[in-house]
Image (spheres, rainbow, N blue to C red):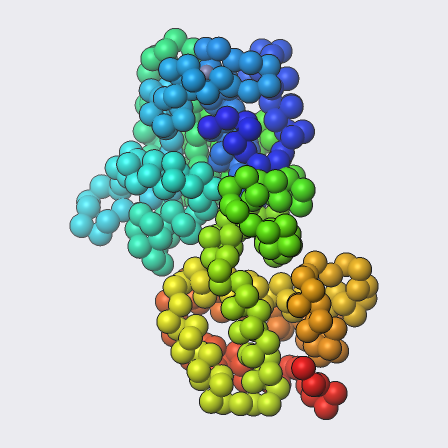
Length: 380
Ligand SMILES: [Zn+2]
């Protein structure tokens, strides 16, 4: 993975390159991003850049044997630790290495995979994956080994926020007394749950939100999309590139989402139970990703409806959507937007936990019917 494969973050890439050029490679760094920020791809690109034997100023070469091994996630000096679920049949807690093949599969197929993609792929649904104390000991053990290639040894710890306290304390010791020539890269989406003692001892590499321009460029390099559609996806995703990729995957569904949203809102207004049931069935039959992508789309439309009340220039929508929202926005206001958003957010949460989609959809619909009052002027 080269820097050029990582979407956006130009400033941070510059900073990282500069620190390498000046020989300032801090032994514990926190790549703090947010879901979909690409902090893991960036950490991988950084390790590749440091280890490249034919490094160019701007990027790793991508072809030397070191680059090739890092790219395949098979470099003997680049280790990974990540959250796992211990099968109930096992007495001892599982190590990341027990699942390294699955981890490689998913991250090579899609470097922007997030925590829920990982848990769903490797452990099926609804499980809480953690970095346990046995894994923390394993990290220390691996870093004490001599670097295979004689240069730096990297340990990329993905989602240290999933570490329990005992594991965190072990890690802290390692950060305080690091073996020579080792680099710990903590790749976090949320620093709230990381021990403050760890935070204070790591060099912070804080990722900003990916700009719309960079998101557009990244999407268009990967998918054949119209400019209009790419812009739409960028608007909905709001800096989350993992989400943008998921949306692009389901591109053909987008028009359907819009139609379904319009149909849904009409049925809520008129309390058309038959249509609500039919829509609930339709959603029930869609894949989990499609269900979530539809609900995220609805959230986006609701927010845009609210924005329209303040400033029409701010609306991040297409022509069709704008025409609909101009009338619809009369019903979305500061008094109900929070409840609307929270209903949709909860729905996404429950989908992840295998709730009955039909019942949930009907329940939200009835609450929407109540929330979106003042229907008299509604003619969409
Ligand atoms: Zn190279």
